[in-house]
Length: 435
Figure 1 (cartoon, rainbow, N blue to C red):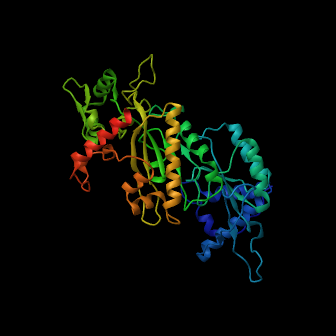
Figure 2 (cartoon, one colour):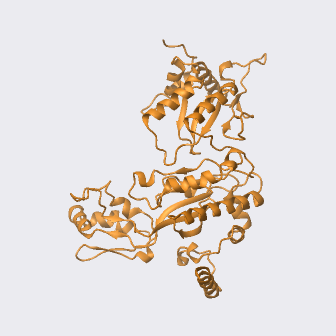
Figure 3 (cartoon, rainbow, N blue to C red):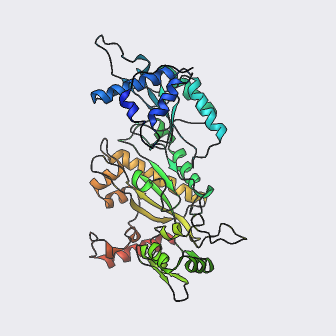
């Protein structure tokens, strides 16, 4: 039976227009027959009041579950009447549980239904986000009394608490090799290696500020890891792009040369592609920066030039010598504005057990250095900006690699004095390491 809602004229306006509105979803939850429906009704009323008064009424606090120092985002309602009583009592608390998703974010429909039932049947509001920018499954709308119960059942189901506060945060990886032909590494294995190794740092906050891992299988970076993570692992390759000349020529014949030039070759950032007189393609792979544009445009998902025997064959494909590039220091706006990650490891293989141990060891060095040298409320990128990349590299035990600088001729800030001497040192160190 439909339950009467508060009068919310300002929120009603947000339901107008062609796009779906979160208000419609909240109203449906508020009228459903479940224990958290009253909480949602009072949340709507609180939000309507905020639109009228132009004030926010939520404050933080401390809410947790046994054995964990983070993972719950507390929200207490400050909206009270003249007597000091909660104006909308059922929304006096509206806490959020952050739960780690599976690597690659793979779910079955049964699992999703079960998670929804666990949340709602234990007094939750029913408002769930798959996924927040943190990467977590966000169960939004619990009280102090229900938080522990909800977590216990989710934990019994096989899910763990995510990160919150000054800690290692929940990691994210793209779907990668499970469904994408652009994958250059085992994204799920890389993420699980990093997250599992530092679960204690995630559950018990002890860092100056947050530290986040993200893994993308290629430079398309569907996880926004270069922009949004302190430790970004990007799948790449270092041999030549593979070209199916027959399919390429078929595309040129069908689409026309203007299409090829306008949409593919002219958009190569280093102009390393050339269509020959017979319409075959040559690529100067030494100058290729793996931007992924040409592979995206000619992907089997975007063209019809596929063979009968191999229906997923690509016109252009990544090379066979695959690995990862590691960038550090990406973040959104805080003290010094947005930062992209800086390349600290241009290429490393990530195939054997030793390779995974190496990336885990590097991540440990980064976390230890960050814990000891970052200022309070300072991200890794801001620390690097403050102390300098050379000091950071020395602190985490990495040699400066000339390949960290993609193309010196394009970098106005690169100093070339003593370049030859430093190059000799680098080759000597490399030879010594391989001896």
